[in-house]
Length: 268
Ligand SMILES: Nc1ncnc2c1ncn2[C@@H]1O[C@H](COP(=O)(O)OP(=O)(O)O)[C@@H](O)[C@H]1O
Ligand SMILES: [Mg+2]
Image (cartoon, rainbow, N blue to C red; front, side):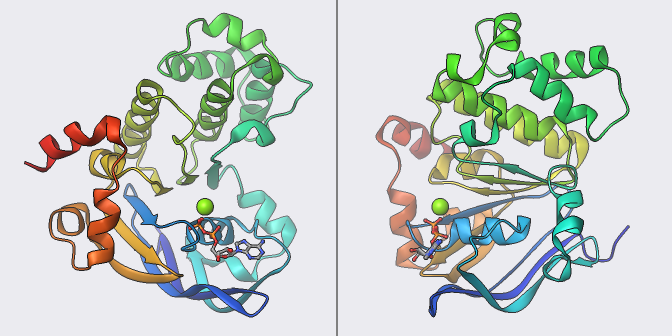
């Protein structure tokens, strides 16, 4: 195994001379889930996109290294990054609709996505997909399978996008606010599948979230960002039960109302 599974090392990223990510460093070990929290504009999405090589062209990476399995990602060319994206480093977007093909059925595109990376037949791919989709609170997976993205709600497309990223079984999965468009029940189902994936398959996950309860439920470590700087980082226990900064305390207090009771109970 590689010496370093994943290391984000003193990375600085600017837009138009404005620093968006300021010498940020963190490590992720195999099977660990890192929660990334911080107010809007603090650099969370920029960090996620830099890992997968999908930053807008106006972004300028000034310094630092991103190391995955001993490979320096920032030195790879487009072709090499394409080979890593999806299969090695998966990505769940906040809004998956853009990641889905509008003119093909959900079933077809899931099967093709799996078969682009693995030598299994269509029936095997379908079976594996059904096992996961059945856990994602769809009323009728058979009907879903034959549907086109435009026939589904935003929340349904989101769950399909999450399932697709997970079905490729990447060792590292990036998720940028994966559950913010989902109702509470669907969000819970998705979070518990992410956790299962990390426990059973050893998948590492970097998850941006607004929801402290989600951090509590599935993350091992937390990184707190403000204006592109790391305010604090550490184990979930340490950061959530004993936050060092007032900024972190304020973030943790900004709990969605519907979940606040649960949040208090789990802190007790
Ligand atoms: N394409 C872009 N062009 C210019 N500035 C950007 C761009 N993307 C992000 N930024 C700036 O970088 C900072 C971090 O943004 P972002 O990473 O999207 O924050 P977050 O995901 O935490 O809300 C913000 O100040 C934002 O305005
Ligand atoms: Mg963002």
